Length: 66
Image 1 (cartoon, rainbow, N blue to C red):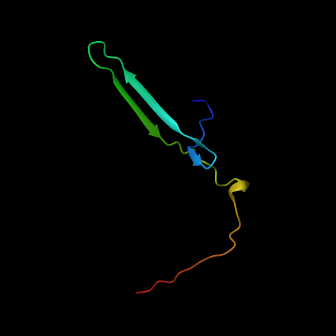
Image 2 (image 1 turned 90 degrees about the vertical axis):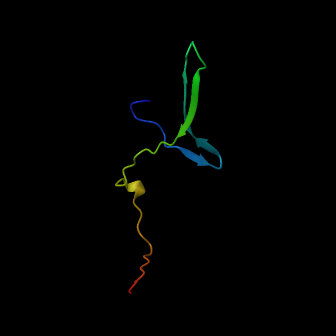
């Protein structure tokens, strides 16, 4: 992986970013062991950045009493 990390996994209408790990163990005296696994990458984001901050337009409250 690069020093700055990798992109978050994504699946959308026009494309996707998916990650797979493929491994094979070579055993000369027997059958090779092979596996392939998918995994999801979730990159952390700084929610304190201005582009992620939005003013709340409406609040909804529900009062529940027993």
